[in-house]
Length: 193
Image 1 (cartoon, one colour):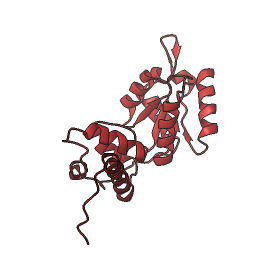
Image 2 (cartoon, one colour):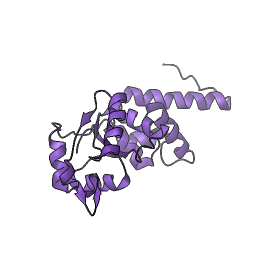
Image 3 (cartoon, helix red, strand yellow):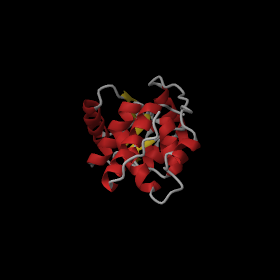
């Protein structure tokens, strides 16, 4: 699996990248770049790094330039125009898996092993699955950690793939539980040390 998150322009580009390599991708939806998309890219950049892989056309270069200004330490991969042209269209979605792998190999990628810091038991004990408010809890903890909302399986994946530490996780769950106790007016029992 590639450590960095690959930033592409669209959903078809994501499909093409996934045919070539095992990697997580984010689509910019062209130059629309909504605030939530920028936020997702920023989270990925801070936690894992990003590789910008935009179409080899003028629109792709404008997007790349914009992202490069925002994310100065981003890595870049380029598929040559002739390898990204088919069916009277140019774009990453037209590139062969070999062309995409070749482009990605030139950014000196290395395989990244996810941590096994968290177990499924951590998800259960923290009431992030199996309880009526688990969906709300995961969304809140994901927001605190900057990894966003996901179903339980996806959340577990993100904990072990986005560099979340045990201290960050415990702090986020504690913050959520403290806020819930304050809003309900319930005080935590003090059992002493």
